[in-house]
Figure 1 (cartoon, rainbow, N blue to C red):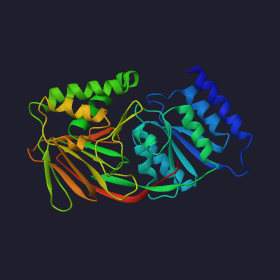
Figure 2: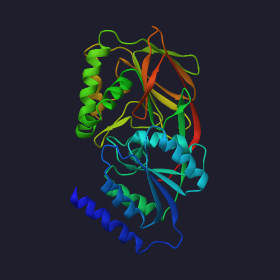
Figure 3: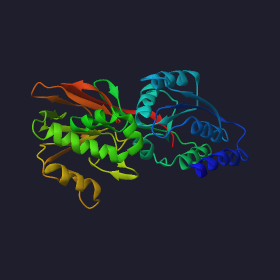
Figure 4: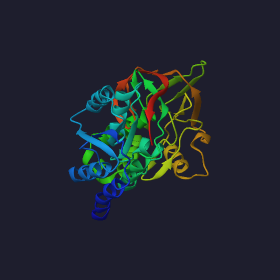
Length: 328
C-alpha cells in the first residue's frame, strides 16, 4: 500500500498547481469502520482533494449519522458531499440528500462499492481520488432515481429472502468480511442456501402494478445494473434496468432445490449465459410500484444496498424519479 499512498500525497500538489480561483466546498463523510478505510488513508485522501476543493471531513459515529450529516450539508450549502465508505454509507448519504440540490459522489471504502462503480468511479482509491479531482474542471451533476421499500430509500438494490439472509450473516462477522471480501460473501451465500433455504424456504409472492403475481422463495429488486461485483467483475441479474429510467426491475427465484444454486452461479460468472433465462428465475421490469409479501406467515429478512434492515411480512416498493443529484 506504500506506493499508492505516496501517489495520493503527490496528487493534491499536482492538481493544486492548476487549480481555478473559485473552489467548490466539499464535505467528505468517512465511515472509519469501512473495510479499507484507515486514519492515514483518510488524511491523505483529504489532502489530495484539497488540490481542487475546500474540504471538510467528518467521521460517522453510528447508524444513520451520515443521513443527518448530509441533511446539514444541504442546508449549509455545500457544493458536493463525498461518501467515503461502503454502500451502506452511500445509502445513508443518499437518504440525507434526497430532494436537495447538493450532489452526492463517492470514494470506494467498502468491500464491493457497487454504486461507486455504477457511477463510473474507479474501484481503486488512488484512481477514484484522481477522478474526483478531474471532475472539478468538468462539473456535470445529474439526477438519478431513488426506489423505496416500506419508506426506506435505496440506490441500486434490495433483497428479500436469501440475499438478505446472506447480508445479515456477513454483517455479523465484520472481521471476516474485511479480511476475505468477496470470498466470504461467496462462502456465506453457499452455506446459508444449504442450511436455511433448501429444506424449508420461505414462501413469497410479488404482485406487480398490473396485477401479475410471481411466486417464489427470494426476490431481488434493482434500480440499476449490475447487481453486484465479485472484486471488479460485474455480476448481472435483472435486465432492462437503469438508475435514471424511472422504473425498477428484478428477479424472483422460484425454488431452492440443491441443484439450483450451482447453475445460477454459473450464469452469474459467464457472460454468454443470462440468469434471466434460467428455468427457475422469473424476471420482471418496468415497475414503479409493487408489493412483495410472505404467504406462509413467516417474516423474512430485507437488505438495501448491502445493509440488513430487518424482517418483514410485507414490503411495498415505490420510486422517486430523479430523487437524488449525483456528480461523477
